[in-house]
Length: 458
Ligand SMILES: [Zn+2]
Image (cartoon, rainbow, N blue to C red):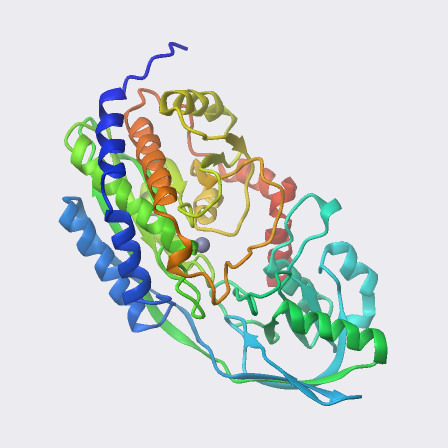
């Protein structure tokens, strides 16, 4: 390949603009300090969607709209977790989204990390119990075992309720939904690492520990919105490159890192792409702020349903969920070998630390598109080992932890990748057939949690 950067002039303009502007941090401040968590079903969620659409309009994007959709809503109620025998003690806990209201008296058992092996070792003894799993994954497994997989396995093993224990000290309980867009079959709550360790000691010392769990959450239908905006292409306007991120956070924090750091990076990319490439792009770049990701990727699923007739036209999607955080700004291609060489060329042109790799997971907004065969990717580190969320999904995911420099790197890399995809002559990826998708879904180690969720649905 001819190693020359054909976009050097536009790169300099866009990167220079981003690095001499405070805009992304200002937008982050509005999203976090004015609208808080923007949790699904709150008035602040709608205010955030409106702010994002007004910002896209102000930047000069076209066809800016809110696309409304119904979904299964959930509102947190107080949860109470009490040891009843052989000692009496009440512990701080929080319900996890889609937890049903219930009142359960049962014995406590620990399932360790909640890995497939941990559950098969527990066997029948999970039946009717409060099953407690740590948020960590066993090192030797080589993959991250997501909370939902641990919960699903608890349900499948006949547990009465699920207790999720954070692996990180000093950050309180970690939240995260139990199901996607539907009320959960059994209650699931979360406690901090310190209380989880205490409960483990109780099991060690007393053998039989009985507890009462009361949950009071409300599951009811609600409405949410995706925000969609276009920077139209000139030559092939119907063909599309998508930059996306969700804007809803979890209700216990500002969701500054996850997702807002990624959301404002998408918005910033939209700003500079409009400033320096408007009326000169070959393909359209579409920017999507997805709603209700945290409780089921619902905005993304609804988008792929509503735009089914356009999916052939999506040449590439880059999901920038939480991309303005501390992680490396690589491009993780979701098993698109035909794009590897092209993206390595992009990396060379962009002259930044952008590791390119191939793997996939099912826990963010790219996944509904992936299932429909669309060429998808996310910004992140393809070489990273499975690790926990740290302060992510806790009350401590707050604005002051996000650095302007990371927002600048995420937005400038996102903008330059989108520019190149939009203008590349023959983009070397075509939508996969559903049979090809199924093959990956059936065999990929990163999709084990998704396969378990399908089993539970059956
Ligand atoms: Zn996220």
